[in-house]
Length: 146
Ligand SMILES: [Zn+2]
Image 1 (tube, protein in one colour):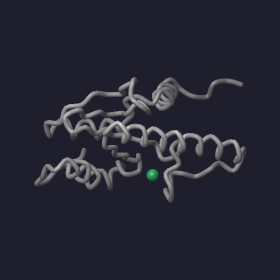
Image 2 (cartoon, helix red, strand yellow):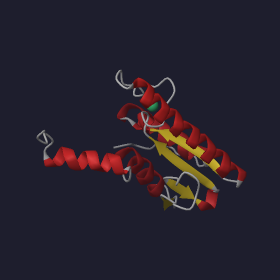
Image 3 (cartoon, rainbow, N blue to C red):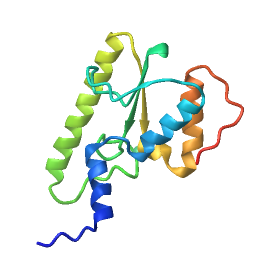
Image 4 (cartoon, protein in one colour):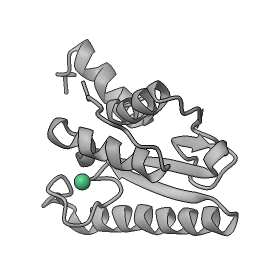
């Protein structure tokens, strides 16, 4: 079968598959950075390879895709009607792993924040970022999200 994806679509898909530097994560990074937070990215030697690690606050942040991480009650988490069981196994496995990773991080004294992709959509991003920053005990008069 011919490859129907044009180059742009394909590289977009690839970036999704690789799971690095996707847009939702970039939103979080950009705003935290602009408020003076410093972090490490994709730390491989920590459970779950957290997207952002803020050593000063002993906190990690995961930015999760709603589908792959089975965001409960989310409209972006819809199990496909074909191979349903396979997908359920796959996503439940991811969820289990997420839970274990969080437990291990907490055991090691880390605080864990999980931000889901849908919380970073245009209409909700500003509120979400506020909450994340609020979590660190910093008062933000007003932030804007591009
Ligand atoms: Zn969601």
